[in-house]
Length: 284
Image 1: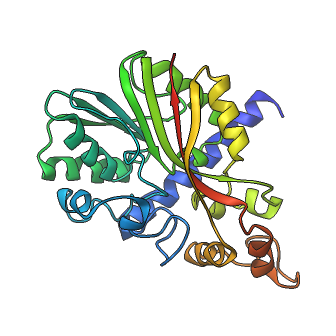
Image 2 (image 1 turned 45 degrees about the vertical axis):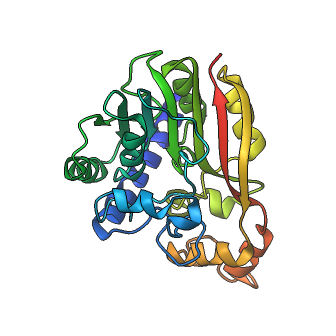
């Protein structure tokens, strides 16, 4: 594929993802549709957030932002740190990070979707934080100066990128020497073409997922070290069916119409092959 074709395809993917998330924030839907028990449509407690975390943020800040984990749960973010959140959404993790870094720290959110940026800025203002900034931009081309960041966090976003190698390179660029990242994301092995080619599945955190091995290798190739998967939760067939239903995926949209078992058989084949992970790395 030519560079122009690759660029055109990447732009189309970003436009589809941005449109999907703009709709979700307008409906207060969670990242993967909001179905009870879906892979990343569960409540905050199931993802490692405490009741105190939820109570600290304005009502409505968490609903579109629960993602697939808590990227702050296993981090060492401290007072005075500078933290960047890739794909900051409605700002839930931004507000929790703001509490962690305190008035001497700094939190920067980056998102490409205007509706999400507007909601995040409203939530930051409501919470009264003066140490949080939300910037419009791509996670493949961060609007952040080089070597300026202590921590990178992200919650179920990098799987959406059509150019993950660029994201990993940007993480390495903006981190300070010794800076670290802790990212919650979805990984998957052997996704069938029907899922890979579905924009709905992509926007739902699954279609663009790469394998855990590719994820780790990508971070290492970007020059990061101490790459470690600190938590892993594999999804069952039933949870994957719930996710597909929450995304309103059909046999026809997945190209399995007329095939015996259809969506159910597709989910059965992916049983245990889709997981959420928390991955850590450090810039040397």
